[in-house]
Amino acid sequence: MSTDRRLDVLRAIVSDYVATREPVGSRSLVERHNLGVSPATIRNDMAALEDAGYIAQPHTSAGRIPTDTGYRLFVDHLASIKPLTAPERRAIESFLEQSVDLDDAVNRTVRLLAQLTHQVAVVQYPSLRRSALRHVELVPLGGERLLVVMITDSGRVEQRMVAAPATPGPSPVLDEVTVADLRARLNVAAAGLRMPTLRAALTRVAHQVEPSLVPVVDAVADVISETLMEEVEDRIVMAGTANLARSGVDFAQTISPVLEAIEEQVVIMRLLAEMAADGSDDDLQVAVRIGAETKHEGLAETSVVASPYGGETSSDALAFLGVLGPTRMDYPGAMAAVRAVARYLSHVVNS
Image 1 (cartoon, helix red, strand yellow):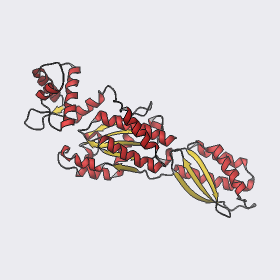
Image 2: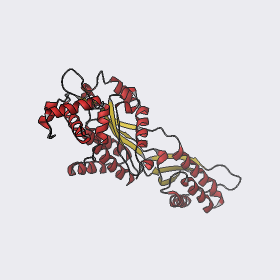
Image 3: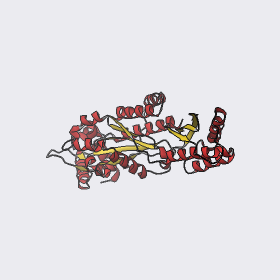
Image 4: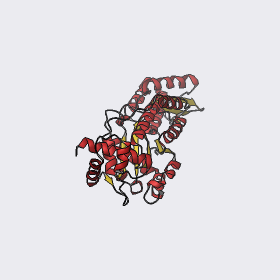
């Protein structure tokens, strides 16, 4: 049996099973696909695929279904990820570009992914520790106190209050003119930088101001650095759980273990991070985990398609997004949707 023909038969079985949810027999393959060989040859090919563990016979009928190994072979031999149609791309771009802030962009993205793929969609918020400082705003609160507002390149906004530490010398005068000058110096020095270069740039500003303001600059530098370095709890947003419920027939027993697993957000976040590490640093690639590859018992009958977003490569991405569903999934469609949405969300976040 030729390898090319075996792959063609496997592709046909995956395609039919995803579309019909019914085990696929040799007769239906002959009727639906132009494989160019006799039914007897297809039966022999199916027997060889079964012996190799790529398909299995769930019942005593003649039909076969793909195994996790078969789905993996199918995904690994996709010639390319089919592009979305022009109307689909325009709809994604228009919908996401209407976002008013980061929260809105994330919520729009997760709803859009669930609608496009009919699976459970997951979007991780950008990590503060991976963000660069876009702008810092200083607001005088009276006396020697300042409100420090930090805006990152991922759209996150953090606020902290600082007070100038007591010193033996004269107290700093934090009037509007002085604060405006500090604000300008800090933004010129640090805007667009990530840790650790950010901290060094902020420290240099202390050498540019009069001595009474040095403690203020040091306090502001400390709070900015600590905020961008702190272990902020990662957050994910999910949508489309009802899609999973409608796919209940795809699970051997019950979807309860799946629902319990996705409720444990740390499980999903760990899985997304592992999948990001699977990809190449050359570009933002789509990664796929199938069945037992998820390494979580509750997700043993599911597949996850994920991609990083917000950077040029996987290593500098801000966060990850993806979809989760039964292993009987439209992999080419899910991979195309995840890739396209990740690219558009990257554009929205970075702009």
